[in-house]
Length: 288
Image (cartoon, rainbow, N blue to C red):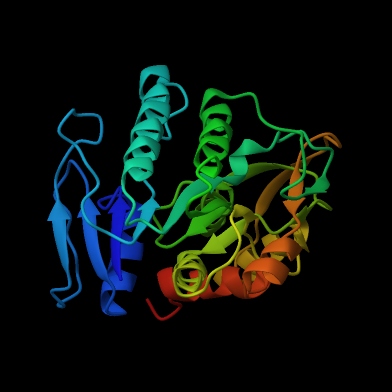
């Protein structure tokens, strides 16, 4: 199987590429930047071309995994580029009869953060109005228009890989470790809006191997925990007293219903607690 991966130098693309190469999939890695692959295997090559250039075409492959995306919301020009990139990918796939599957990395940021602390799933309609989120939703709909191939739009939450992440949970962990004061809303809010990169890699490999129906897929961890419980887990791990300034806003927050991914796409999630502890053990080993 030949797999074309966009955004090969990005955090998701590079980590996924290393995983698939080590699993003996042949990967074609696309990026404008140099891609450093840690695997010693040779079943890949770099395809250094700008998607928005006229000479860009998707090379011979069976599957496209589209991870390339600008995420800086305040830079409107770069956010709009996402839509141009996605349209170019869609057009290329439509012309290439050898491609059988496409996996698009979307985001749970498509949901409105003011969801009244309720659960959201693939059928929820309370969406964010930010440029980044709105364009992600448009691209999801665009890719699903291609009925010739299988299309999987994966809405991922805060991804946990290294201590360099910049998302809700990773930032809380860093601040608790450094004894910084933190403002958090709704101590009793249920939360499972996180995913280990290893869980994402395993799930994507499952999509490659099996022939599921096209659709939007929401991923996260299982067994949501209250935020105050998550704070306790992190504080106990570092053996520190946290400095949390709890606020209340009953309209703010949501957690994830991942039952559809489990039932229809054979997703095997880790629990929220285990995901957090695995991340802590990997990136903040106690003996260091």
